[in-house]
Every structure is written in structure tokens, then in C-alpha cells.
Length: 257
Ligand code: DAK
Image (cartoon, rainbow, N blue to C red; front, side):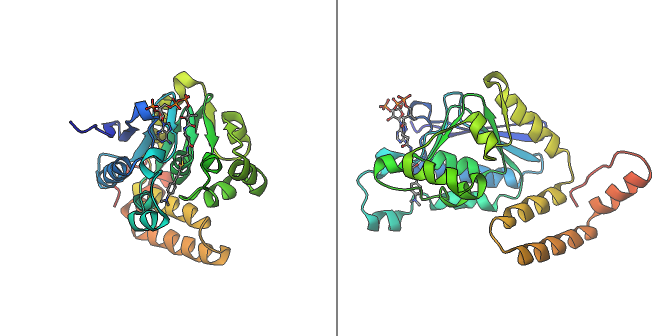
């Protein structure tokens, strides 16, 4: 029987997506990554879902790419198979994705968390890029997103010397949004997702895309794109409703149109 690598449930407009290889600390093998991205694609198109929470379990968010799967690969095979390529599909997800991280968040696991939009960490979360211990380096955004998040000084120590950040350090350096007690990290992530899920869906998508573009483009181009998105929202029913509701001192009712 094949393992169910991804578990999904939907409640109150929030999809909870769990990585499910607990015996391997949710190591990201190809099958798991493809199953995860397929699940996220489906949820992105589901009108009952306004936001997504991605999590592992208390011991580990994910301990990285599956070392055993790739240990015998040659450079040519790595290039041809490109195990982690499906990983990039997360960038196309339009709905907000919140990573709820507890325990180990290492290598490709940290790269996955950083590909999400918001990170809620438990006090026991530990973040690292330990690829140097395996004779390699990060390959799924770990040198790029990490450096943009925590700055060059800390990123260099993490990538070159396997420095691991505690949850509080991760908060201090701007890698995560908030740190909460272990018993509450999932509940906190779900509550945040639930709040976001009540907001105007088209504006949420546009805002997420624009913030992410800030990490990928030059300031002038980013500002131009932002302005176009801002103006285009004036063609939506939700803009009309949101501003009318403000003027009428009532709560807006969003249609996502
Ligand atoms: N891969 C495979 N199995 C793993 C694993 C991993 N990354 N991490 C843990 N496991 C497995 C262990 O082998 C063990 O399995 P059994 O021996 O029981 O069968 C089980 O999970 C429990 O682990 P431990 O017994 O080691 O548990 P401990 O509590 O003692 O230690 C640990 C937990 C997370 C500190 C330790 O397991 C550990 O150091 N794990 C490896 C962490 C690591 O090095 N992560 C980086 C992996 S490299 C690419 C782009 C990116 C990448 C790859 C390709 N391309 C563009 C193509 C990313 C690379 C990486 O992430």
C-alpha cells in the first residue's frame, strides 16, 4: 500500500495541509513534493478555501530533501531528474500559505517554509541549512531567500558553518513572523489563516504577488507593477463594496469578484 504523503482538511475557509512522512522527519522525497504541489494546486482553485496552513508535526516541519533518495545521483542525473523542480510550483499558488513550524526545519524544509508567505514558529522550532555537512550547498532557494530574510552575516554562518537558529533567533533576524508555545503554534497559524481568509480574495492575491515581487525585481519595476495591480483592483466588485461599506459605516461583504 502506498503512503498518504499529504493529509488535507478544510475548516472555516482554511485548508490544513500536513506533510506525512513522520518516520523520516517528513524528508522531502520527489513523491511527497509532487503530492504537496498537486494538493496546493487543488486548494488554490477551491472557492471554499481562503488561506492554507502547511505543517509537519511537533518534532519536525521537514528535515530537508530526502538524502537517501539523492545520495547516489550523479550531477547529470540531478540535472535531468531535477527532483526539487516541482518545488517551484509553490510560487504560483495565489492564496496565502502560512507555514506552521515546530521542531526541525532544515535544508529543503527551511527552503519550503521560506517559500510560504508567513511563518508561525513554535518555541521548539530550529532552522538551518545543514547541506554543508553533506558536502553540498542549498539548492532550492536557501542561499537567496535566506539571505534576503536574515541578511548576509547570518546567512553566511548558516550556509558555511551549519549555524542553526532557535525560534527566538529566527524571530529576531526576521525569518519568522511570530513565536508561540508549542501547544499553540498550529492553533495560532490556523487562527491567522482564518482571519486572512475572511478578507477580499482578489486583493489578497494581488497583495501577496506584489510583496513577493519585491524580492525578485528592481524597485522601479516593482513599484510600476504594484501600481498596475492597485488600479486593476478598481475594476472589482470588492473595491466598490469595500469603499461603499466604509462610507456607510458597515462591514463589507466580499464576493471575490
Ligand atoms: N533525508 C532522509 N531521511 C531523513 C532525513 C533526510 N533529510 N532526516 C531524517 N531522516 C530520517 C533518518 O534517517 C531516520 O530514519 P531511520 O534511520 O529511522 O530509518 C529518521 O528520519 C529519524 O532521524 P534521526 O534518527 O536522525 O533523528 P534525530 O532526532 O537523531 O535527528 C535530525 C534529527 C533532523 C537532526 C537528523 O535526522 C538530521 O540531521 N537529518 C538530516 C538533516 C539534513 O541534513 N537536511 C538537509 C538535507 S539536504 C535540490 C535542491 C535542494 C535540495 C536538494 C536538491 N535540487 C535543486 C535538485 C535540498 C537538500 C537538502 O535538504
